[in-house]
Amino acid sequence: MKIGFIGCGNMAGAIIGGLLDSGAYHKEDIIGADVYAPSREKTAKNFGIKVTDQNLEVVSLADIVVLSVKPQFVEEVIKDIRDHVREDQLFITIIPGKTLAWLNETFGKEMKIIRTMPNTPALVKEGMTGVCAGDKVTEEDLKKGLEVLNAFGRTVAIKEDLLDILTGVSGCGPAYCFLFIEALADAGVVGGLSRSQAYELAAQTLLGSAKLFLESGKHPGELKDMVCSPGGATIEGVRTLENMGFRSAVMEAVLASADKSRSL
Image (cartoon, rainbow, N blue to C red; front, side, top):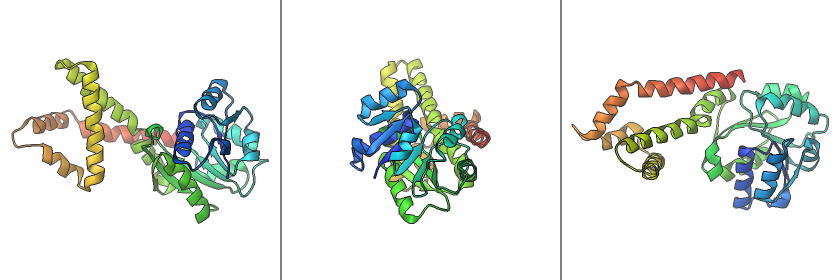
């Protein structure tokens, strides 16, 4: 079973790294294509896989093809390869805004397509990926696709019309988390902590809090209340965040990102 990547950016690299680390694939089983030479060279250096500037070479060799190009380039890529794809090939797309209907129409026929939206924590094998399978995708196809996607984190099956809001929550969410880490750290520096100390404190606090939520099964409000002692420092901080519209700002950011995803 060979897997090919059209587009060798960061997300493709995360998937390739996950596949190799998991043992699901060996470097001889993977090929990548990218028109941008530095991306090809970086991928070959990091993973030792075969790389090319020819998309058709990937299509001719791979059983599973991952389309990981920017939305503005995908139509050109599909038109370049559509006369050479095989009906038994499985396509996995990492392209916001491009629906299954649009993809099938652009291919000129109904294909086996799994539409996904991963996020950048895939780079450290902690990704969160939304998955939506097309009508031609069989249970066996989906199993193969999930083996690829689970190599770098978790997956969740979702209706296609919810992929844009998922993009706003988990696809774009890491940027909001990094902004929060930066803000926490900046406050620590104002208070006298060194920059390195402040970043470590903020990042580990976010990591530990997320792990506590996932493993405890408790509602986030309950976990928040566990920290908020009556008349204490934490509830005073929460009160300040609420006064500044913290939750509303986050919600508006997610909804704005989802709207943008729909328009791509």
